[in-house]
View 1 (spheres, rainbow, N blue to C red):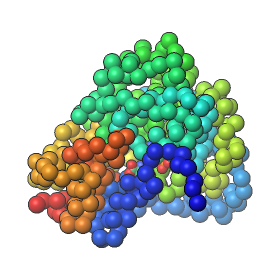
View 2 (view 1 turned 30 degrees about the vertical axis):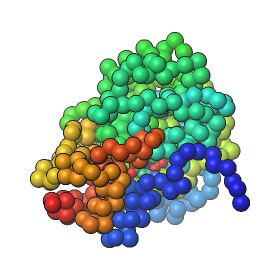
View 3 (view 1 turned 180 degrees about the vertical axis):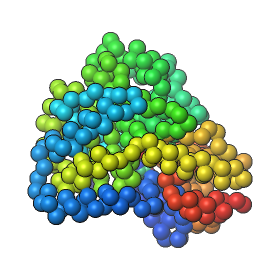
Length: 379
Ligand code: PMP
Ligand code: GLN
């Protein structure tokens, strides 16, 4: 059977590949981004309660009304408040889905979408599957943007730009100043922004999360995407939400209703009740201490940390002092098999899979897991 390919991504994502390799070799899995610790027991109980209290049939297309209300309050209560009306929120089955559906909402065949290189692995396939053409704007070795490259990439065909802060894989965050500057490059054209903000609650060292929605002009053309998987450490629930102005939300739902109709109903009820008792500050502290603990453990390793993650739960490190001749992919495989620690080669986030000399660790793990991994990595 010959089924033509619809995207340039791999047949098996690097996350599936490295997690499978970790399992096969009984390695500590710091590759795919997911927590290995227990989730909050109250959330487990709320999900069971939601089933017991008959939240088992379709939810409204837009989402459970209590969840939407509570998300509006949650956003209002951020350190930098976001005033969002209920009409601007849609509950979705995960951020990956929301990114795809936002692209399906706006793209016509041949439209160009700018992505930064490196970027999260689902963006380019999602653009291509929706008939769009990815345009790559390279970041430098420190994952920084040269604004001139962005300016040069923008054309009459540019329909959208995908941004991601806190960033996977770099751990970098966009400041308010950067968002303001970004606006200057797009303000005279009708370009949509898809802002992947799934690590919104994970920012460190007193940094404050700044959403694209905080910018009053960008907000009018922006889809901001969030994931309960990251917020509440439940990646397997595959639940998230998207915020966009009313006109864009209506356009989004026009597609969303035929892709899934609505997201999982009992999960929505449980999330609605949980968000009332969840403490984002406590959560941030816990994750900061994990990042700090991991960085401290890795000080004695042969890996070079160029800069500590400002956000997300990923830390990239350079291994070139240790293994100058190995590609990052080969090194990741070797590390998994020989040192029993699985990581993600940073090349997987580049469109040409170029060798980077960097690997990405996920530190959303129990202290004992991080300790054991660090022991294995002291050569
Ligand atoms: N965007 C980024 C930057 C991510 O790291 C991830 C990983 N989970 C996603 C989107 C997808 O989130 P979800 O699991 O909610 O689809
Ligand atoms: N977002 C996760 C990561 O970057 C992986 C999600 C997935 O497996 N597709 O590790």
